Amino acid sequence: MMLRRVHLKNGLLLLSLCFISLLGHQLYQYQQATTLNTVLKKLSMPVSPLIDVDSLDLSQADIAFAYAYHLQQQGLFEDAVAAYGQAERQSSPEQLKRVYFNMGNLYLQQAIEVATKMGIDRATALADVAKDLYQSALKQDPNLWPAKYNLEAAQRLSRDLPLGDINEAGEAEESSEELWSAMPGFPIGLP
Picture 1 (cartoon, rainbow, N blue to C red):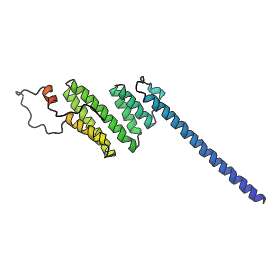
Picture 2 (picture 1 turned 90 degrees about the vertical axis):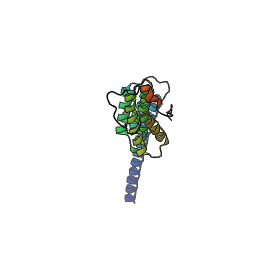
Picture 3 (picture 1 turned 30 degrees about the vertical axis):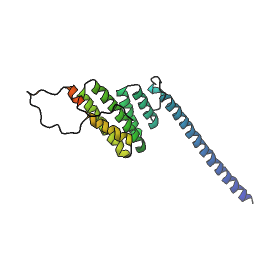
Picture 4 (picture 1 turned 45 degrees about the horizontal axis):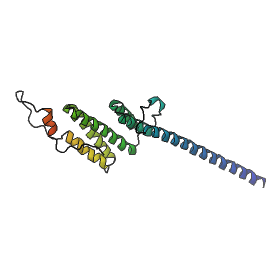
């Protein structure tokens, strides 16, 4: 009888310890989720001021992604590219499609902006990078329709056609206005 009580007491003690550790783990996860939600809410405010990077824990992929998007919304191209690169290194395969898609959008928006200022060569290079990023996103998720649409927009800006014969030195080159007007039906917005 005494032996049963000792075994019962030890069993209840072990069960209590398991329950307390599970409860502690759940509390830790809740705290992490609350912190993540607070940071994401702060970063996703439409008119938020620039947030100091030192106040964020960029070791979490979601926070790094949100910070990169925040920089993109602030119009900081180079900083956003660096932040998306950091988010890419920390992301799971499921998150990579979002990172590649947003990086493609960033490069395509920059390409359109540069093209309207008649910087055709730089715009073409930026559009080529955007195409590669959209293709990477589509490798992760072939049914990502916004990436397909934006890939087509990037292809219109950066033609995948052969260049043909090389112009001789005496021939006049086309002006950048003629190049820009040769693009049929370029869509203005991105999804």
